[in-house]
Length: 66
Length: 203
Image (cartoon, rainbow over all chains, first blue to last red; front, side, top):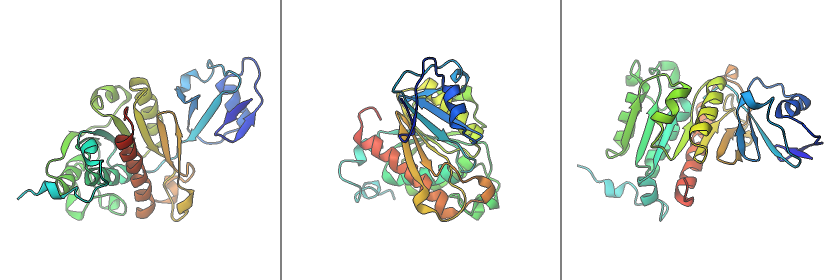
């Protein structure tokens, strides 16, 4: 089982990538930053980063303004 | 006449010496960065690295720590003046330029932690990636979702490893920006920084 943002539980399967997880979550924010087990995953690695079971994923939404 | 010994006498005991030797980077000196910088200097942080390419405009005065006389000046220079007016002994590294990902490792090398205070989400995104690549074990305190008015309790802090993010993660600049809400977020960023610098060995 994958935990997203300490809240959502997503069923784990062999070969599940960060990109596949994000697609499944249907995020509609233009920009996000993702960590897996507290390590940042750069955007170019979303397709290649394979999640292990019980991974703790954090998705931060980035909005304009400051 | 300098009476610096008095500035920090009401500080939380045990924090001043730790903050005086701290170096904090601030990427962007707008609503978040200028207000966070003021809080950090008042708290006793000894050295700040400030970077911004922009000049002060009157439309900044609704939320940024500038005054009418600053209009037209480079933000880093105007802010440096205000920070030195609080503490003349503050050490400041001033970078008047538009930052790119390749600047981050060099400009912020001395910084123990970084406050992300950019305006645009795309910039926040590359800054997070370049900081984590360059300094994976140094804290990064970001803000996202500080626009609009009210909704005070929607402003949250979420952390993952060395990344901390303040804001509601939703409200966008298209809603407009309000002094109090931006400054709350900026001061929350500063508050996290102060806490890290005064409690953690690796801050």
